[in-house]
Figure 1 (cartoon, rainbow, N blue to C red):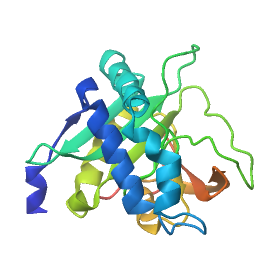
Figure 2 (tube, one colour):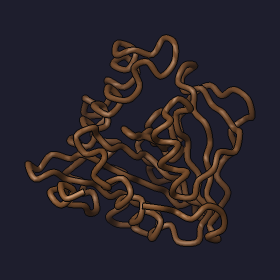
Figure 3 (cartoon, rainbow, N blue to C red):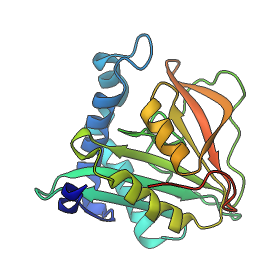
Figure 4 (cartoon, rainbow, N blue to C red):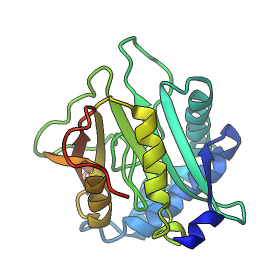
Length: 226
């Protein structure tokens, strides 16, 4: 755990947008090939190559700007290595009672606010669903995602530190996310932090299988462990 000190954590900045888009693409390449039949590096590049374009950076820039100017509504914290490289990110979006036409969290393909974790997890993907039909988030709830932790930063407690900051931001709100059903490490991580699967399933773009997990906003259920 000593090496974790070389990673600084803090709010993401709009000027990080292009680097975050590239990091998200790298997390996809690390995480998803082999997650289900037909998902390989070529498929990931076809589906998420947009992250390496200006449009990909623009999506992150818009969300980071929202998190900067409306911190009650949007959350985005990053981890940065000693060499300045971004190695992890966790974002969230609070559903307000008033209509909000502002940008959503950058889509991740697997999770609920939009996130797979690298450990990846969360973002609401726009894919074909299977099983129970996905339902929209209730007013006042928080959607977690995206979340990614690159391999070079895993095992250092960074994911738990980001989660602690996110839970403090979310407060008593109920929380939800999507996580790839074959990503057992990510599912264990979310369980340790009080999330539980609902049985709701989704296929992102017809191939990537995701499962819904939720966490009570009352502090009930499994307590988070770090």
